[in-house]
Amino acid sequence: MDISLVIPLLNEEESIPELSEWIDKVMNENNFTYEIIFIDDGSTDNSLDVIKEQAKKNNNIKALSFRRNYGKSAALNEGFSISKGNVVVTMDADLQDDPGEIPEMYKMITEQAYDIVSGWKKKRHDPITKTIPTKFYNWTTRRISKIKLHDFNCGLKAYKSDVIKSIDIYGEMHRYIPVIAKWNGFTKIGEKVVKHRARKYGKTKFGIKRFIRGPLDLLSITFVSKFSQRPMHFFGSFGLLSFFIGFIISLWLIGQKFYSRWFNISITKRDIIDQPLFFIALVLVIVGVFLFMSGFLGELIIKNDKHKNIYPQKDKVNID
Image (cartoon, rainbow, N blue to C red; front, side, top):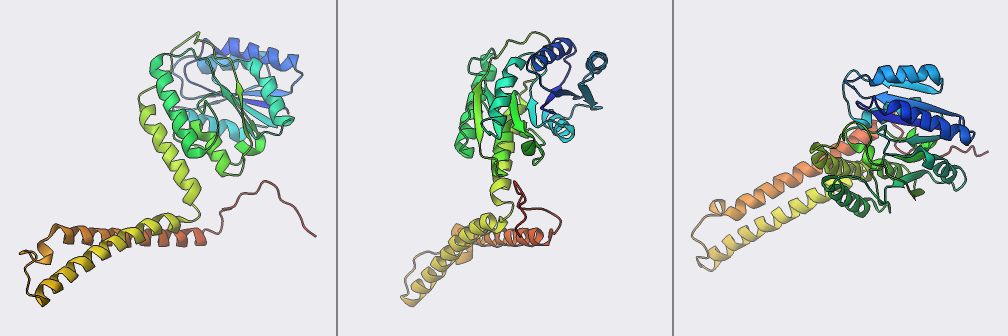
């Protein structure tokens, strides 16, 4: 099969028929073999019934339905797990993404050997309350990930099947699939300017929670990707630094006390344990020990996890 289209949706009953027919037209015009996987993420309208009606007309349509809303990442993850196409395309169900962009993105994957092609909605039809946060997140993600994409959050993306079969996404991590893929060794990531249409039906799912969850997930991805196989490098480094600073402060206080006793000079009238520096040093030493032990325990857990493939491979080659 050439293409699997994975489309998560929430309360999009009005747009589903038009989107299904539009996709079918584009696929047939380009002689693609394809499947459409709709993931109903706990819709409270008649979205699932509409999908079933469309499936009667088009046997390329499949559907998954969640009993409640789990979020876009969960929906995509489930869709990825059952997709069969050589190229997997994701898009939103609100008709803001143009299926007419898919053939060119498919060629970039199959002919130019890109692992991922991300859409870039260069000209957006969104309110300023959505565009400004989006630009900020895109700038931050570019700086942290070193991936030169303008629009990480664009729903229209194309992937090699190997990419989506090698990753798991949850929380709000659907925005950072290119980042996750890069840390898993898929480094050829391209971009294509795509059309962005104004919303025709329904209402936006953009919410205030995105401001909090998005940055936290980015930090989580960055940390896990860099240090999941070497936790001692992270915890041990900060632990040793904290312990060293606390130790130096302690030596300073002890040396100061001996100096004042030896030369009978009253540098301070307070005992060591009455000085704020003593408690700062004590806390730094304790924190340093705990961080170092956390790194040590993390290393033991990794070494004992015999069932985990900690170094995913692109290909397996037999060497005789």
